[in-house]
Image (cartoon, rainbow, N blue to C red; front, side):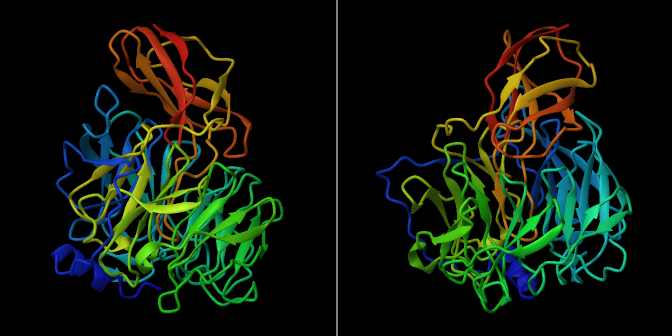
Length: 493
């Protein structure tokens, strides 16, 4: 477990961490750029979740109120950089977690928060949880307590995932157990992993619907180089393939993020000075590039850019300050430095959170009051955008339960990763309408998706409710992982 995190947090917040040197990228190649939000939240922020009406739900973190949530809403032109903040509601007063599992359910109406390595500042690996009910388009969430799976004494900083079939699977941090959410205060037990326990490991959804998990312990699955696959058809785990090197560190059993890329391979950053690439078709691992200056992904975030590169936050490990942002290029198979936000190199990697905005930009928080947005180099990988079919070209303002059909509505990746205790998934459809006359942007509220598969050319549907909006012609797109479909011209009356 991450027993030294509280100490690291205190040093970071108080500004007492020594600045470690970090090499800046050469300026000869194109780089993304960082922009601070015009309107900062006024509190320290951490995990971010995508609400289904285009708003971003963000948790208040260390040195603040851990029961509090905040909502970032884009401005009239769809800019989150120029967005505004509002109340996201409060968890029950006895539940204020740090490092927890979280998912937005496919019904769009509920957000589930489970566990926490800390509760109200105390290291406890809590089993507490909460469900937030969304009021679309405005207002905070309404939060109530949610019971853990029967017989569990811990949930803690455990990973979670929405499977391709729509089930929400939550791990127990400190055992081999996991369970499926079965509605408020109800869970269904699941088969155990083959390894030692779930601690510090993460879930990566694959095109096949299976789930990849890299081990952070010495196990019967290839010793120190283990990985496992979960089969949702049998609800069982089995050894997958041996990684080319040990990716977890011996002291804290930490791991870095593992992101499914648009080439149908995953890029795993190690908490050691190693990276690896997994090929699901061949069920095999190969070595990735070695990060410069002995940097690692010691509990670190990553996001998949629309251009196909993976943005990662790396650092020296062991919760030390000295971060450097890098990009992995799956075509060139290179890992190179890119521009840093204001928090680097002062931050250790574990404080960082990355999240793909509906605009394709990537938002960054680090337990401080400064939130920034990364704009990647332009470009979208061919064939990854959704395709709308059988569009409804006549819509009524404020109408509910309209249906959008299309291929690849969920995108082809979860989008972002951290490891065990932050799930910033954006693999579900948003519906965005842009006025042909004014350029103003409106998000519908999507809900009740027919599938959560990320397999290429999957045909699916989602229901969507329109806000009250001016009559006129609009360009409608479906967005997943920050990538829009081709637009469809619709009339709103």
